Structure formats: structure tokens, C-alpha cells
Amino acid sequence: MNKLLTIIIPTYNMQDYLHRCLDSLVLKDEQLKDCLEVLVINDGSKDKSSTIAHEYEANYPNTFRVIDKENGNYGSCVNRGLKEATGKYIKVLDADDWFDTMNFEKYLRFLDTTDVDLVLSDFDNVSEDGTVQKTHSYNIPEGQWRISELGDALYDMWMHAVTYRRAIFEGLNYHQTEGISYTDQEWIFLPMSRVKSLCGYPHVVYKYLVGREGQTVDPKVFAKNISQEIRSWKAQFEAWNYATNNGYGDAELYMWYRLKSRAIYIETNMILNYKAGFREAELRAFDEYVKKNNESLYAQMENTVQRESLKFRYIHFWRIWHCRPIARFIYKTESVLKRKLYGI
Image 1 (cartoon, rainbow, N blue to C red):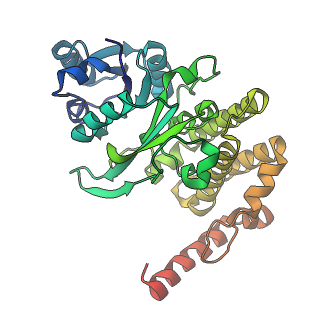
Image 2: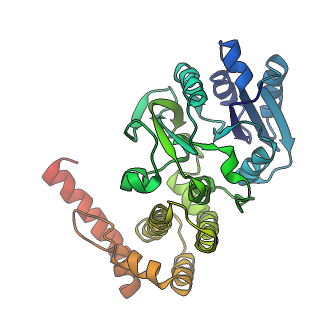
């Protein structure tokens, strides 16, 4: 039977989380088992991750396959998975996350009855004990849509929501940056230029673990690895240039928004959270890179308000005065005022 969905699971030293992740993909329906392909890409783990994954491969050989490789970080796992995948659709699942198994079975049945380039499903932010902290819902009306028809409803895109038709990668110059973290942003960038049709699945499939010590989104880890975030952003900028010459499809405004918002996110974090360890030289170098390569983007970053309540433009302020402590003071003052005046 042809596989309906391939799930790529990049895995590095995830022995404490991998059982939960893989258990969530063990289905009771025999017919559904036959249409699912799970590729566990073991990225040179030094713990028992490979051993655990191979247990599932042995117990469910028609569903699970383990690919052991040398360490190349997250992007290398996605790239390898793309080469090995056979499913009509393809989705990435991080090894410390998991699926809502019941909704996942329903989701597979849904995929079997639809024919689009992109399906967006809801997902939860959850704590270590599984408590739901936030549910991300896209509220896409029933039916098939084009990206341009949904306006800014897609701008808050997360990789956890995305399932692509695998065929959109054929002939696409897609290569996720290897050797670094933070490349999940690339997964929801260039491939969007090939999406001609999409639909929503208004139920939670993905459970995204937040708050784990050592996660790349931890502020201290983010500060330590900011050069990796910048390198990934530059890869997206190069993908933008590629799309400029090869067509955006329906995604031109979407891609521009994400490129700009991520650049603003990087600079604002480096300006306001400088005590976390961000280096001034890295901030200046990134800012100069943007200015040199795209003056329109550079100007829009400066004119964008980063804090709506004070209408304050931190990037504009920093570019004039190069004074991060004062920007931080304004930010902290704003936070105190909001707590006193509005209780938030």
C-alpha cells in the first residue's frame, strides 16, 4: 500500500522523551498503520535514542524506520528525511514533542480524503506534565484556499501546524541549513512558494513541549547561539532571492512578512536583552548586512513599532544612539506601567 503520510523525527540525545513521542504514533487501526511511514533520523546520539528507536522499528516494521547518521544537527535530519520519504504528504515532529493519538488517527483519515499542497492543523503548547498552556488555532474556513485569499491569517505560522504535499519539493531548490539549530523557520519559508492550495484541520494534532531546560528557545540558549539564528535568517534571505527569480506563487507577501518579522525579532532581542549575552558587534554586523543587501527591508525594520503600547521603535532608537541600556530601561519602565495601570 502506498504511504499516505511520512513523519520525519530529527533525534539527538532524546532518550528521556522518545518513548512518549513514538508511542503517540502507534495506531490501533491496521489500515491506518499501513499508510503511515515514520522516519526516525538519529543524528549521532550518544545516549540510548537509537536503541529505543530500533525497538519500535522491530515491533512495527511496516511503520517505523530508523536512519542512524553522523551528527549534522537539525537541518541535516530534515534533508535526509526528505530524500527517504515515500508518503504523499510529509510532516516534521520533534523528538521531545508528540501527537494527540486519537486526533492523529482522525487526521490521517482526513488526509486520505483531501488533495491539497498544504494542510494546517491546530496544536497545543504543553508543559512537561502535559498541561495545555495555549492552543494555536488557525480558524481557516472549510474548503480549499489560496494563500493570498487568507490574508494575514497565516502570518503566525509555526512548523508544528504544517503538513506539505511531498511533491512540492520536486524541482525546488530546498536545502535546510545544516550544522546549526533554529532552522525550523526555513521549513515554513521557501516551500510556501510552491503551495497553490491549502486547507485547515480544526483539531489539535501536535503537542509542542515548552519550558524544557536547554531548549533552543530558552533566552540564555538563544543568546549563546544567536549566530546560528542569524545564519538561518540569511538562508531564508537567500531563499527569498531564489523565489524572486523563480516565482513566489501565492506567497510573496507571506514570505516578505516572515523575513521582516524575523529580522525585527532578532534585532529587538539583541537590543533589549543584551544582558543575556548578545554581543554588540554581532548586532551591528547583522544590521549592516540587512542595510547592504536590501534597503527596503532595512527601512521597514526601522519604521516598525516594536511595542504598541508606547509606540516605541527600538531599532530606530538604537540605530541613532547605539544605546542599548536606555532602550532596556524604557522597556522595563513600560512593563512596570502596564502592570500598575492594567494589571498585566
